[in-house]
Image (cartoon, rainbow, N blue to C red; front, side, top):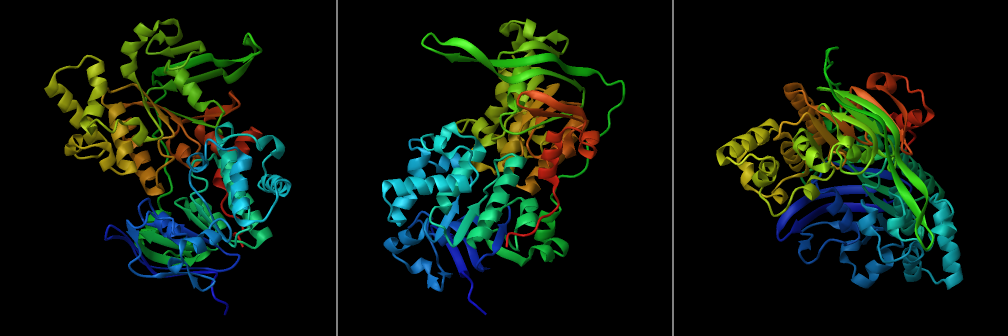
Length: 533
C-alpha cells in the first residue's frame, strides 16, 4: 500500500506547558476529502495550524508527535523550508475572509503575492494567471475585480478570492477551516461544489474542518471526531452517520435543530404590523451629488405578528432582512406604517418612541461584540432597567437575577466579565439583557449562526421555553433554514428588498411556490451528495 499524503502520528500540542491536544493520529490520502469535526475548543483548528507551523511559537509547543508530509516530518523543518511548502504544496483557507485578507491591498496584489513567492513569472504572466484563477473559482467579470479591495466584495466573493489565493500554486493539500460558516446557504452550496470540482480537476486532497455535519455528510470521504483535544472516533462518512459508536458522536449527530413552535389560539392579539414599509437609500452622482436613483433595500413589505408568535425572515445577504428589522425598531429611517403597541411608530417623534423601546429589544449575531468588555455581566443586563427609570438597587438586582435564571445560568455570573464565558453562554447573557425588561417583541438577528450545533439546539429550546412562559413575539432573522424551521410560525422570504413569498412556515417548507424559495430550501436541506473524491 502507498503511504498517506499526510500522516499525523501521536501529536500533542501545549500552550505554556498545558496540553490542549493529545495523542492525535490522522491520515489523508492523495485525492481524498477528510473532515475533522467537533465543537468549538475541541482542538480542530490548532491541529490544522500545526501542519504548517502557524501556531504562536514558542508559547505553543509539540511535546510529542510527528506530522509527515510525503514521509518528511514538517515539525522538524526550518523556517525557510516551511516557507517553500506554505501556500505552494500545502495551502489553507481561513474561516473569516474579511480578517484574513489585507484591507489595504487589491485582489490582484494579494493573489499575486503567492505567485511571486513560489513561481518564476513576469508581470504579464502573473496577471494572466490571476485572471485564470478568478475565472476558475467562478468570480464574474474577473478583470473588473483586479483593482477592487476586500470591502468592495460580498462575503461569497471574498471567500472565492481566498480560495483563488490558496489554489494559486496548485497545492497537493488544501486545509479548509470552517470555509462556509458565515455564508448564506446558496453561497455555501456554491463554495463547496467549487471545492469539490477543483479537487477532482487538480487531484487535490482536502482537510475540511467544520462543525456543520450536513456539510460533512455531503462532501467528506472519511471523518475524524475530536472532543476536548482527543480523537474519539474515526470512520468512513457513511459508517459514521449510520452507526456512530461513541456517545459524543451520537450527541453531535442528534444535535440538529428539531421540533416546531407551540401552536397559538385563534384569538391571539396583534403585536406588530407593517403596511408598505420602505427603506430606500439615495444614490448620488455628479459634482453636486444629485440624487439619480434609489437603492431599494426594503420595498413595500407587509407583515403581521401576533403575541407569542415567531416570524422567520430568510434570504441571502443583502436581501434586506436586517434593514427591515432596524426599520421596525426605528433605528433607520423608513416610510410606510409600523403599528406597534397601539401606535404608528413612523408618526411619532423620537422622544415619544423612547418609552416604547423597553417593549422592543434586539439580540445580535455576535454576543461578544454586543456586550461591553469593560462592564460586568450584571451591569450590562441592568443597563436597560436604569435607562428606563428603575433606580432601586434591590429591584434591579432582583430582576437581573431573575433574567439570568430564566436563561439557565447561575446568579453569580453577574460578577464576571463577558470574556470569561463560552459563545453559547454569552448568547444566553445577551438574551437575558433583552429579556430583563419583559418586552413584547424581541428581534433575533442571526443569534445562532456562530454557534456549534449542540449549542444552537440549546438556544432554540431556550427561546421556545421563554416564548411559552412569557408570550414574547420574535422576529427571527437567519440564513440557517433548519433553525428557522424549528422556531417559526410564519415565514417571510426576502430577495432584493421585496417579499417573494410569505405565509405559514410549515406550508412554505413543505410546498414552496417561488423558484427562489425552492432554491434556498434545496441548498439547505439536500440530504447527501457524492463525496469529494
